[in-house]
Image 1 (cartoon, rainbow, N blue to C red):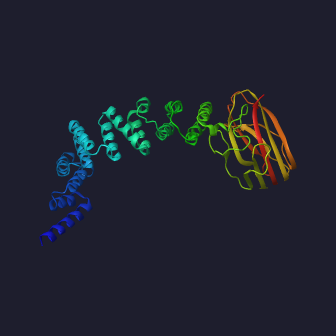
Image 2 (cartoon, rainbow, N blue to C red):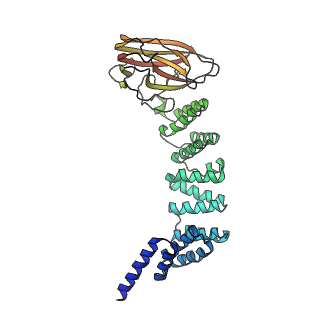
Image 3 (cartoon, rainbow, N blue to C red):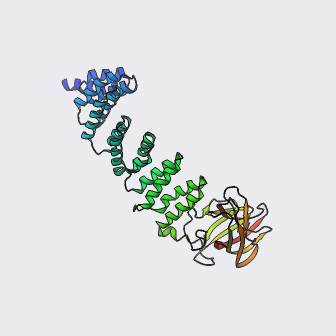
Length: 392
């Protein structure tokens, strides 16, 4: 009979606590007064719902007395002290939480936040440094809180571990809020470090700079990325501003590499059976109309300079009044800079070229395969290889 009554009472207390309203939790405590969980639950209700921080202190103290080994309870007690304006007891409860559980990321995260909120930024940064080192998956959230609280790139940089994921998370955050100078500082620090990373991780930084029209900085970052990666170095040829003009590398869809956006009635593929040099070319199968083949590349150039654009092309039964060309246009205002001659019919591999001159404000070009105009019918196959853009 005694055990059954105890079990029934415990069950009723649990059901009442699950209702979470203050009166139900208070009744649950009356049935199970030695439950640290229920006292802590009432403490939280008083803090966040009924906003009675002074009354909450007693409940959290009782919870900590009943279970002094719960870091969550000590952190709740710290919250009540903080809400009551007692800084000294807040810090004491925070340190008790760390003493109980010094390594769990959730505990360190909460402690670091409390320290930051209470104005102890030096100790808070020390805790965030531990968190970033041990749990880099929390980098984005941790760095965001640090930045919103401090707005000090140097202090935050000092706590970054030698982990590329953490560096890139900070760079992404800074770029997303328009702090481009700070992002550049962290990027430069990473490039000068010995931290190893896959070059693909850094392409977003260059893309964001291109989108922001910071083309010189984007080009500099691209060169820095190439200096860190032998794979990326293979995209570049001496004297040629076109990256991977022979189509032998991966299509990056990013940075200053080739990008591809599929277009209707134009099938684009890399062809290993037909090429001028290397081991493959770019093949375009036309089956209707369309101007833009969807394959393009950004190129950083200098104003008022002459360049020679050339390529090797081939065609098979390419029936059209307006054949495809290799075209350059301004990356910002879309003004045409120049195009090679058109290709139509059936032709062997042959070289096409043109010379262009950039305007006084031109620093950024787009290289693409286009038809002018694109509304006319076209059917057949076109190959292109060995694309070059050189200073004249």
